Image 1 (cartoon, rainbow, N blue to C red):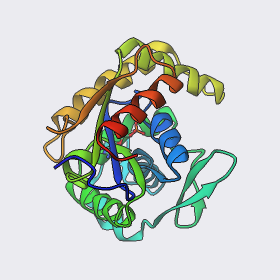
Image 2 (image 1 turned 135 degrees about the vertical axis):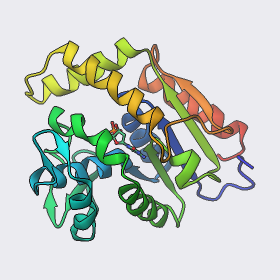
Image 3 (image 1 turned 180 degrees about the vertical axis):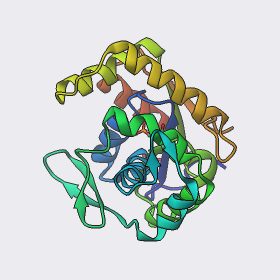
Image 4 (image 1 turned 180 degrees about the horizontal axis):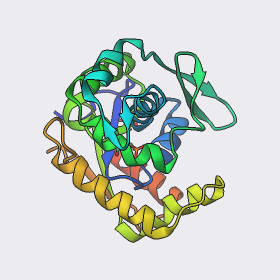
Length: 235
Ligand code: DC
């Protein structure tokens, strides 16, 4: 049952397409509630970066066996960064936050995240992180696979052009040299891959509440989530 029985800390699952603003939304909700924010996309990106840097992706091809053999060597951790108001991701003690959002990683992350052994490892970690509740977790399969019993599951959507523009502005602000059409192409391909992979495809959980933020400010989104939490008697 997707509701709050009392006002104890809960798990809030946030799923949706790429570049819908899930992380910004989830991070802000977590800060307002005093919850922990977990960006599961960063975990799939970190594994992808490791695969690129350790020779499991060569000439644009993923060597799945090699990646699976490497999985036990990949230790992922989050540490809170007060400047960002969110946790940074580390792989084997190395800060990789600055390297995981490049277009190169984005171009391979769907392939890496469709490997069942990768998903099994990361889902187990995510379930462990959310065990104590008081978390807002964003991803693609949080409300369907990781926490199907989350007290609140949100499915975020936004118009494709709005999403491409947001990701483009974000990358340009970081000094990456990309074109809008390159981003549109990447988003389009990832939507198809995310929805059609065999293991845990992206889909709206039956009990999810839909949030279309195409024309909403972050403050509008916060008012929306507050009213949903009140309605469910979680606040
Ligand atoms: O949220 P993001 O764009 O940073 O996620 C990167 C990729 O990781 C996305 O294309 C699909 C994959 N992903 C996933 O398969 N499952 C999740 N829970 C989170 C992300």
